[in-house]
Image (cartoon, rainbow, N blue to C red; front, side):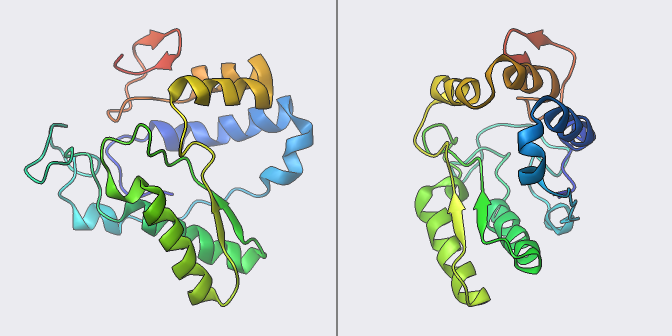
Length: 180
């Protein structure tokens, strides 16, 4: 999903990650399915966030970080559900986490489950949003990745993902790229 974010590192890595996952985990290839990039640059047009505009990431006046993009996860789930509808897919998976979420209201379980209910009503079929990270911390997230794909999957995560909103790929840490 391209929402006009400030950094393009995550989008640039997508083809490499998918190719590597399909090569290293051939049993997953069929389940990963076809890749489909949806342009959601209306969030950039709305603006007002450090993720879409040239702003400093800091605590905002509303008590949320300036990196908060109002409705972002709701929009992502809506777009994914619409594409899923066309493809016969009713199970969506999101990486939202209420354990470590900076207070973003659209990462809360209640928001996600309410969105799933609205998507179900709007599509006249049950849409389920799975959030396997919702109630676990970063250590448990790493353990889950290790359990699912072992060292190969951890290596893909370390080498191909970015944990910093600026998209920095300069500083390589034991756990991957980011500001530390």
